Length: 391
Image (cartoon, rainbow, N blue to C red; front, side):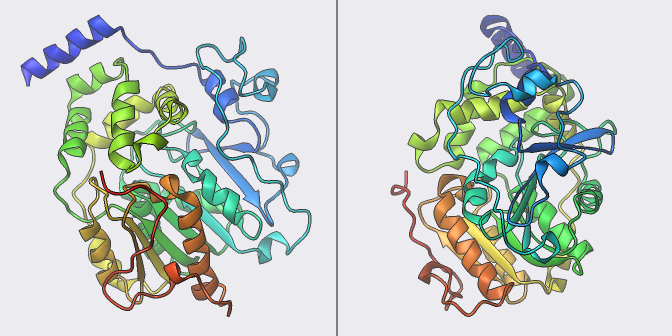
């Protein structure tokens, strides 16, 4: 271990330290409207409320630029480097922001879905789903504490119980009464834990390559978490160049490496360099409790869809099969050519399948679902994907 610390230290000397990026610049780049900022629990939660029935941005008390961001910086073209945006190159937008519908049911009558991202990710992971769902759903997404533009908790408490408490307060503040909750990876664990806590509030549950069961982590994941949990190495990692590691991790979780573009790597890397986020990642890893609570999954009675990439090397398909076994009357869709982030790698197919499930099981629509989303006749259901064959 001493050699590992020395090696990391030498790497920093040779490659150069990489400091955090200015928060104002990150907000101008990644948090301009339709982003909103909600002061809560000592942080300003970065969130977005889009689609049918969403509250107009101009009417929201949390729609103005967050503290520390000038109006000029917030209004600046996020694709153009400016004085308020030093060191961040231009970005191309993969998905345009959908226009807000001008007619439809009132907010209280609109079906609503809350989307939760995974470790080291952000609300941007859901761009494809927002584009697909917003014409008929109210879509709410946020950066969880310790990630994205929300940044770290002052308390440093990232336990599952603290996360569920946070989501309860956020749902109240955002005016969410009864809603579908969907989560990817760590966000999936937060979603099922919240559904257990508040089944009266949840009309549907979607788990995408979710965590929560005890498991033997893959080599890549285990090494990363082990390093982050060690105080000395965690401190050194705060200054280490991260683009290379982020790129390798994304190629681990994507099957189609061509989709891991420089823009994608830069977005993940930039948001990890939000002041405090790398410290929070170490705090989360060091204080992670043993996996518990999954024993209660058999108590869930909400319509549940489980979506899994068959080539997930971080959280294997066996975990998805276990969710299917433990959650009564749940449905499992397996994507043969996708990895740990199906909703990023193939957003259109996964969003289509999710909406078909929600029409049948939550909204009670009578229209036929796509073949890929029909209830499985056997223990698994496979959905063809546009992704390439296995690596």
